[in-house]
Image (cartoon, rainbow, N blue to C red; front, top):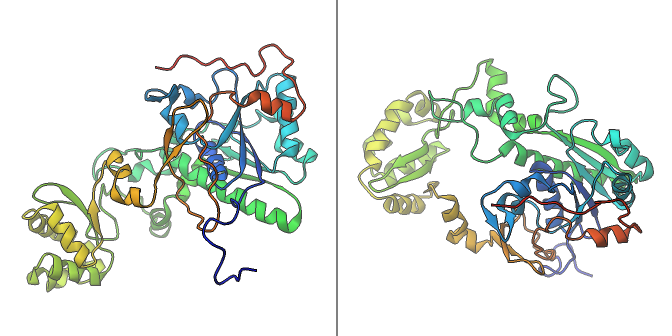
Length: 410
């Protein structure tokens, strides 16, 4: 028997969620983020799609890789696809049969859409009391936004996230990725995993809910807390920080780079060991974090002048040797190809018979003692449909049931 202290050898245990079956009734981003993470932990994920084009992200092109949109490929690896028309009795029966077998259902239909088809969370759980249903919505099931569709842009706007993003004195900006959707996906994942743990304790499933609006609000963390305790509307600070300075980009003689000084001791080292400025190190205005915020404009002006005389490589080297947090401003492709990304294996190449290899961004967690699930590439629409119908003892008896109709991609 292996002792808890030493643990088993690396990658000697089966994936942590192996044996868990997930029925994925979600589309676009938040739900697929959740279900792909569950698949990356070893769960079997069956993605149910409309026969009329499938997940809408399949049509969000360009760009395209091997006939599939890059957007769809980003959040659907390690899944099986079946095209099912939920407006037919065959389609609804297919979902009911798989829901009886499943451990988890993830759905992000408009409120009432599944219930009108006899597939509400209560109906599915009545037939499978151990089932965990995760419902993802735009803004919850109460209030004036309850029936509104969930779009990331609207969630960023309604939550205040846009109001604090963008240049100081400029217009509000959305974050450069659908952050409300992504945050909601990871929130849903945490809730599903907690419900699975509780099921082991209590023997019964659960209905968990999350939404884009709540997830975006929670992402405001200290900014939201500042608003609550001060009663004031937070301002935009661009690439600066409301409570820390210096914490922003600076221009070296050849390129911009980032400096993130979070403590008074770090600032003293920055002044003395990196900038070699005894005058700055001894300036009483900048001794404390509060002083640096109160005298922000003067400090930034001094740092701008000092940093402008040497190259970015010089400053990053000096900051590294002085243990000052600093780094480049990388492009996305540059970051994906960076030595750091390569060292930790951030890009995962997925494969599937009959498909071209698909590079994707690996899940941001590592289980050192568990085997990693096979790197299965995202599926074509209905690629696994016939086998999945047969697995629950069904035939596609209705005209057009499960037959994909995919608009041409550009």
